[in-house]
Image (tube, rainbow, N blue to C red; front, top):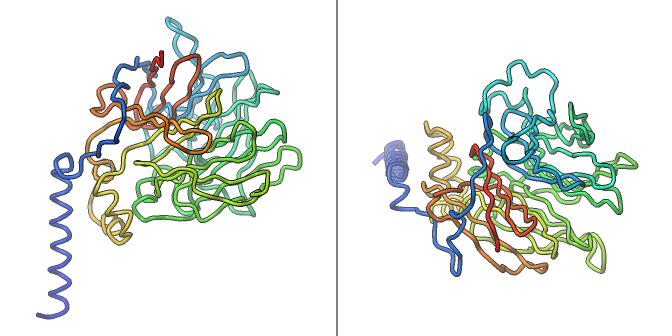
Length: 373
């Protein structure tokens, strides 16, 4: 048998294998169960984001008002309460004539895509990690945000994702997910096993940006510890959370804080110093196979598959929601799920406030409110 025939036969077999996966993802690679998890998130109340999609991050201002959230058409919205709905609070671009559709990935670079949000409690300013436009800030009254950090060492930020603020030292820790892929290419970033993500520090006084970690596989959520001794960063592709020590005998070192059963997005600390991690999806057998063999993911990207098909393969074909609470030393304390995706799916952030969990999603047109009591 000739070499060309062997290659062609192997390629045909691979294509046939992927075709089976595409047509039967639920049966073959359904999201795996997590021991001791509680399937309760379907009891959450759903709050629709009228005329918008993707309330990715949720935050309250220093007066406790909100939540505020960024959506896919580039706006930051503020919740005014039942009966009053959502108010347009801020934007990251001034020319919004073409920003009229709730979900238009091909327009994100024009309209902006606010992801992580954090308030500076001392000033009332809202800092915005815009995936395309970098780190931005808007005053307490909202309006058009202004740029804070748009480049590092002369190179533009390509995929700004999340942040946390150390108000004692007046610095912001934030992530740049990739130097190669933009937000609308996030599936390609994961499937190709891209490792160009970074954890960065911005000093608000000196205006200097420092690279703390690089070579990360999809750098994502960021959260400081309660005593500011370390900062956590989610590494989505590897399904783990890294800890970078800021102070103490291990200052400057990094270790693995937690290994998770799925793809972590944002991390948020509660008042006790524990951390809630939102999983975009659990990691099934197919995802394990792809992530341990980069050629499979790269082959998938060469096939005529849509974003929806690739995403379905990666998440096991079955929408679901998983939230994990970690202790201050990285132990899993609690797992809450909506295993069937009855109410919530593809969650991006879990914010604990006043006995409730507010749950965002980068893909859905609503957020969830789950009562812990």
